[in-house]
Image 1 (cartoon, rainbow, N blue to C red):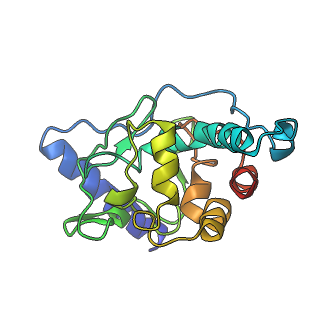
Image 2: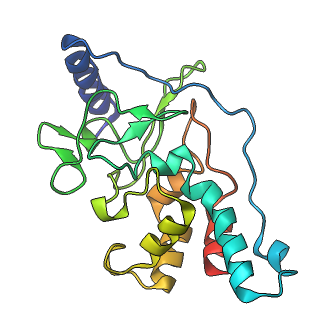
Length: 202
């Protein structure tokens, strides 16, 4: 979709939300000024016990998994969240049968393949390749980190992925990567996608 078509679609979506009395927030607040960091796999090498080392590494990964940039698209309901702290998505949208929204309001109605900055410090509209909501089986909002670990490893819930496929997903998937580069007006997940992939592999 061209820039003009994209802007027209966005304007229609905002107008529709305003017409039914729904407030429209163009930038999420507050904004984190400094990105948090992640430890590297080598930082855990002093933990001799393999199980304890694995727990420590996954706890570090939890800084990403439980960050709003991740949890907002892994909600416990059929409606995504946004913001810091998270609030229901505005305008109102729903998961839909394929995770891409309802027929009248698809995710791609507003979200393109990359972030769209409004300029002047006014925030941005997030975007990434194949913007969608995580499947219901991978909803972990409100769950303990240990529960998330079991959920992610379970092929019955993770889309049939092996551990190596999960590592590749965390290291290379464009939507995962967006969490580390979410555009103006949003706090980024800590570290980088490359480091997150390394921790997954460890």
